[in-house]
Amino acid sequence: MADRQTIERELEEKLAKGDAALQKMKASMAEAGDGASEEMSKAVAAAERTLEKGQAKLVEMKNATDEEFDEMWSGAKEAWHDFTADVERGWDRLSDRVKSFFA
Image (cartoon, rainbow, N blue to C red):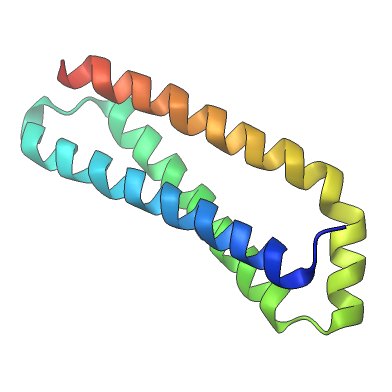
């Protein structure tokens, strides 16, 4: 099992990567102005909600006692791998849609 610091660091890195991608999308939307689609706006809003949930989970993990953390991790480690894979796939799909919109 990965240690607590490694797990927290990996989550921080994934959240930072997601936030950077979100900021790029927002900048692209701002450049597009009225040309930005409703689908794009919904995708950005969904990405913001996902990041907020991830950031809240990180705070919860950092504030947990070692025992609480171990319980959280034992119940979530399989879901964690699925979640991170889904997030990465979601960002890739969203990125592809963004690229095609601004191409």
